[in-house]
Length: 133
Image (cartoon, rainbow, N blue to C red; front, side, top):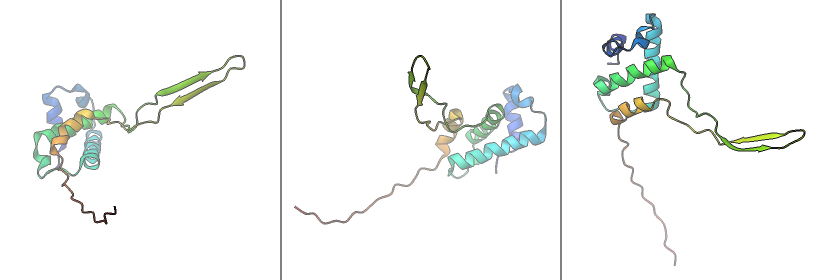
């Protein structure tokens, strides 16, 4: 059974999260919950059986719904300057940036969900070949 809006509301109310309480419109809170559930499904699946029944899962989804309301999600880090060249007189400036890297925008949620992920089965390979000396 997926996490319900009542569960998320109760979670935040018990912890005094006034930011969640400030979102008065039920449709908006419900939309945030659905976005959080979609994010978990899209980024952390597959999960172990009955993962949705654990307190960890509820905490992760509730916190994620709040975080989504506070900041837009991003998959890339901010650009970092690699080198900068300057010239004089007519002035010319060149800036080179490092390639952006993917970062986890919700590391706290990832820590909560990580133990609920299914362990990938070990794959065994077989290679055949001819030994030549």
